[in-house]
Image (cartoon, rainbow, N blue to C red):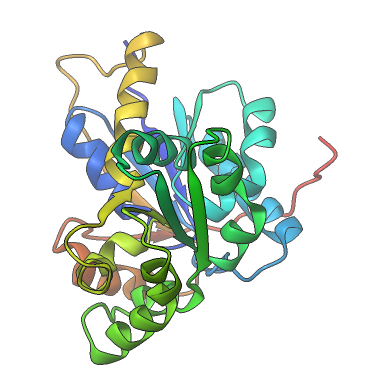
Length: 272
């Protein structure tokens, strides 16, 4: 048994969907969440910058004594997963693999769409994992403005629907029957995405599937919190305004996030 918190990292507020799913499945587990709002969004940034920012935040989580790291950001997962598993002594869970496995088991026609940030789609992390199965046809589409909408708290406006129509048109034309939401911000836009894609297309998001992986890892490594543990949820952000993070979190998730403390991460030596 281990009552230390699970460390969860995202470029902003999107990873809160993963944090909520983990809390739903593991209500005794304490969570320590850091949103790297100082550098958000990660999607358009060079991969080397994403790698550096990600490792800085992960270092900060490990320094605070977490028992597991959850990279709740698709762009960061694609950029830094191998480094993180070599760098840290605690188990590392990411969001891409769980969503890929679910998409493979969900599709009926073998035609799978993937949407994500420019960085995630450009990395081919999803495409490469899915195309290992040669019966699958994979169609990928970058949707960079989706993160901007979510970070602005805009999830149900005519502008969101119009942009969704534009981005998703190639995937509708490709007749995919399963669509992977390859960014943890995108579940906040499920209404618009589902409306555009239609009722016959299954949406796969990584929040619940990642929580399942967290559960399996904790059980197999005997890291579950004790039966008498009292869960605490701590939220941190690297930006300039804790109030802005709380305001947006409240808009997207209700009152789950009550306060956020600002943290600074330092430059690291990537040769380590």
